[in-house]
Structure formats: C-alpha cells, structure tokens
Length: 260
Image (cartoon, rainbow, N blue to C red; front, side, top):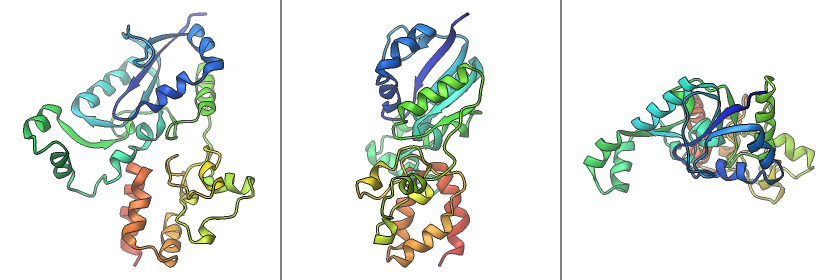
C-alpha cells in the first residue's frame, strides 16, 4: 500500500504540538515507517512537499505571508488538521481579538517600527479556520498525545475522529473532585472542552480554559455566577478571553449587553 504523504507545519505558537508528536516515543517509529513525512521542521531538515494526503498545522495566523502559506497548504492537502488551541481557536495571542487597539500593542512591543509592521503585513492572530476549511481539530495547550494518535489513526482509516463533546466539569465529576466554583474560585471548567483529564482542578487549581471552548457551554450563566461570587466584569472578561480566542470573543459580544 502506498504510504500517505504527511506534512507538519508551524505558524505563530510555541511549537508544543511538534514536541508532543516527538513525545510519542512508543509509536514514533511506526508513524515514521508507515507514513511518508514530507515536512516536519522540528524533526528533519529536508522539508519539501507538492501534494499531501494530510496536513497537520500548529499555531495561529498572524501575517499575510502565513495566511498565503496556509492557503497553499490547504490547496495541496486532502485533509487538514489543526493541532492545539492556537491553531484551533487563536490561542492567548488572540485574547483581545475584536476589542481594538491591536496596532498600538504591536507598535509598543516593536518600538513603533512602522517599517517592520508594513514588511510583516501583520494582523491580530486568528485561528486557521478564519482563512481555510479545517477538517478536524485537536485542541489542547499543548494537545494530548492520545488524542493526536486517535485522530491520526481515524483519518488514516478514512473514519471520523471524535472529540469529547462535554466540558471539563464532566471529567471532574468522574474523579469525584469538589467543585471549585462552590469554593468561590473562578474555574472555567463549565466552559472548557474536556480531554485534559481535569488535571488542574484535580490539584485544586481553577481551570483556565486552555483546552479551548466547549461546543455548547452556558457562557451567560457562568458569567453571572462569577459576578455573584464577587468578581468584576473586567476580571471575568479577561479570564474568559485568555484561551477562548475567536469563539469566546464572539460569545462575549453577544451576551455582554444583556448582563448588567
């Protein structure tokens, strides 16, 4: 059987997903022997591709060059998979998406370098899905090794991979954890997609939402509950936005006028 051609690409992020793939030590030899890896910046230097069966992307899109490269990858690929919260939702670099003032923040970081701004053709970070069709998501910061292997295996066998549809709260209940919200802590478990194993709440640390937004959370109720717990609107909005990216920005826009 002809080997599937696979490309692994990195945009604006920490490269955590590439590291996680390399951490698949027990399965790595099988992956590399059963697939033809055309490009993998962290693992090989000879990175060239023309047509791909599967493209795996990490990182958000922040410049015109990245946008154009992403669109070329999409044209060359049969299946495109976004890996990690940055590629799936925009990541922490898009936490203020839609709020305005992005160019001012860029100039502050790069010491008012207008030439660099024009050269980079930079814009506020957005998820891959803002510019191309994404076939599958593997959320996480970084993604979970088992979810990566699950998704890759399903795609290779032409079946549909499945993400957990429930929030982190469900995993907390499985572990019989005491609800941190009942203790007044600003836990985002009700809003965050499951899959992490409720690692933080299991160690009495509030969920920060790094697995990205759940599919159908009750964002309004969580907002009102945290207001009742004594947190300010500004504190709640900032916490919601940390990892929510484009999805949370849209949800907040729809509910803020209704919440006093």
